[in-house]
Image (cartoon, rainbow, N blue to C red; front, side, top):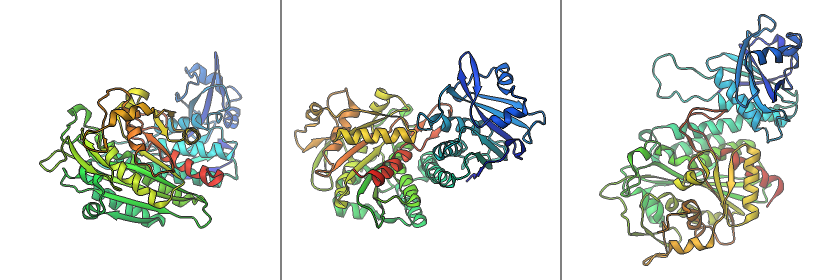
Length: 497
């Protein structure tokens, strides 16, 4: 992990490889953001003019490098765009997170850098440090030989002198997001349900979480028909993991449920080949729950949190479940499986019902659930549905403060009719093509414990970024939803329900 420090010295004397400053757009001019004052003095107040001459516009994420010509101890200045002229923390610090992340990506391979971005408050320090650590990510587990840029070794955040707690929170959250990115990026040959469950046990042991793992025999005996049915076509048997964090002063309990399909071929309802190569990411929801529990255990909010990882591998074989099979979900409700590629909702159903035994005040599930989410909202924005509008709005607000893009979506009652089955209590897909993300949410709602407030996050697009890196977001696994789940937990601890 990157060595992260907080300092408030005269920047000109810092012995680092590069100093990062912020630039804001004030068309047709650019202005230096706060934090760059001492750097500007070293250039006799003309640094903005120099940067403008080099083509800097202040656009968000834009990188402009220039030598210091000995005016600073550092040999290089990196100016990163923060966007239009405004308070950089007005958007919950997202402009700062993205700027810090873009700067760190541009400096990969450096030994040490200093971030002189706007950081007058503890919240700003958290944003800068979080963005820097997330932007400094690199997945090198399968790289051989030299020539690969390594993360920056040491990062100094120049900010308030009393922001140690802010720095600690950034480190905790970034480490948890890194865990999730690593899990999502791991080839499915090296992340079977058993190995995933073992990883969860290791995290629990390191952080003091209680943990229980149900193997394939226990799942059959316990009546977890969704997880068993999805996993029965694979040589790698399924698992259900329960993690728990308890606080002695807690007044509320929150349950998180995550979809953990370690690879999704579609089963007998086989996916097209070009839709399958990134299905190692189909366990991103369960990974997010694991990452969030890891962070929560270290941050210690005054709330009880339970996490469920519903883990299986969805493969076609002679033992795989068939379209038209009927399975019995934990608790007794039957489901006609009309499409084996709509498997995530089946494993989630088991875990949602099981979460009711923890008497939660709030249940939040997170899943890479539907391709329809990408059609409706694109690859960067998650959909949020709930059985209570106020809960949905609070989740959206929490995600916004955490810096994750989500959008509130409805659960239209008329979509339930499309899930009627002629032989079972409910079918797993509708005959109606439209509104697939919403129909999946309607299906999950059927298994939410009675009387419990619930929200559903569909992160099918945001969990895995197939394009070029931007801001603090790398190519591949993103760690989507971890920060939102942590923020929800802290909100419940601070404000109740």
